[in-house]
Image (cartoon, rainbow, N blue to C red; front, side, top):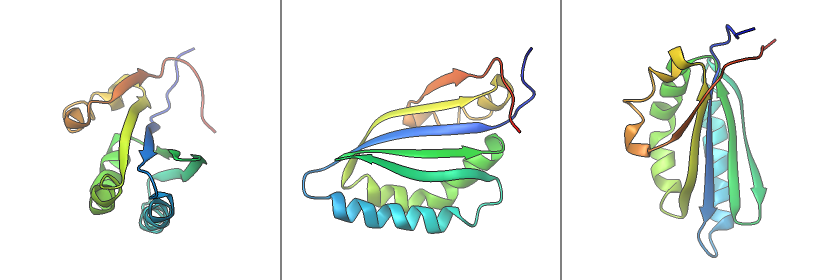
Length: 120
């Protein structure tokens, strides 16, 4: 049974530079405050394993994901001054991923195509 879900998730992993973890946590708080205004954001948060950080985020569709990147672009630029983006995954159904491939090509993400499942 194929899914009709349009949800797109962006799965970034960061490695924070030495002695910059406290500064990165302040940036995470800025990301959260800015993202709370986005109507198509389904969930958003940061998880930590020492200097390794994951942002857990999902959007109703590709449009929501692109709107988020526009919304937080300046904050992301600041974050990348004190952390490296070590991995970037994009998950979603192919019809939504097709809308993301060109706009996100500079980030060189790995795409995972949703084939089966459901969302409540």
